[in-house]
Length: 443
Ligand code: FUL
Image (cartoon, rainbow, N blue to C red; front, side, top):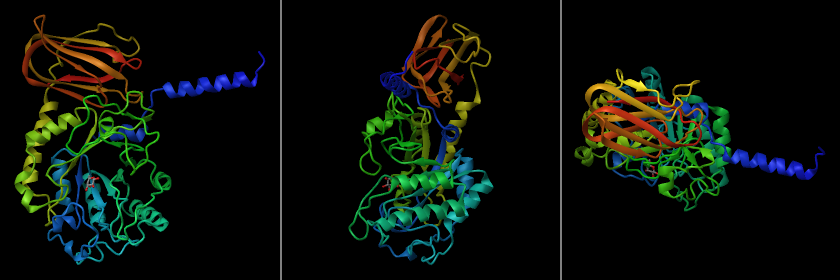
């Protein structure tokens, strides 16, 4: 056959089309991130002392003065709550830096307090075996260079300081809120450069922004992911800080999305992101927190639960109590596996891999009370399951059925009440290629 330029063009077009229909795969760092699916967020800074949510950057640095700062206590609470790490607001929109940055004059160094909060927390996390992450607001209402090209250098220098002095940084948060600086100017952020710098400094760090590159915002701050939740997102035509896809789309992802960018659910245990005395009786109950857990982690997203330290520099007693309750409820999910002694009817097994098949049918010897079912998809080969029917039967008669539209990292199907059953069946009726459930459990 003679290779004409036309054939080459057709060949290339075919190649492009094929690449586009491929199911995007997670990176190793993303796969690891999925495993650590519940961790703390901590909003801490001048707002903790002024009662504001968004400081304007004109606050006196002296207002920042925690009297009993103890980052070991934060870590102890995180550990005891089952959280896998802590992400701290190293710099919120007010520009105040929790570390003595060389690139700002609005930091802990200038406050009467003087201690380096980032250094203390990063050391405490290491000691406790917790992951350490940093929130760094691009929007800065204090920095004199904001709104000019020089600010891009400032932001890059700050990130460099953080990575070099306090690393390893597990997750980096670029907040999407974007407004004017002290000079009334807004900033053209050099996102490409920021990303390049982070990748060079720390290739394993997971970067959050509304639209990734590694993980996305879930589209709300109320604590839930979409019932359908694809780890895929189309980002073409969207620019960070200048409008993301519709909030509902962020919650559900895109079925045929071009990029693997799973969702993270950020929500506060209190009405505000920052601590306030007046909200001590408004801490979410453990029931409420558990509902959030089911609707975030239980829908395949990660949960970033904000637990803001108080003005002493400690996690408040009321928050600790609610978190204990949450931990007990999460532990309950893992206690028993009702399927341990059930017979598995291998309806349509894949000989090479028994976990790759589309029907599972468990039969129990006698009726047991089901409270819920947990499914986990193997994501290394991409997220595939697009519809599954879960049913329970009691002696041949169906007593419960639910259709789910995605599984992903973890799907928790919590029953409205305990249901007696002798059989559980899971039928996957739509999948992008062979489905792969790596875990099935009932509690
Ligand atoms: C938002 C911010 O404006 C809030 O203050 C908070 O930090 C939240 C997590 O993200 O964009």
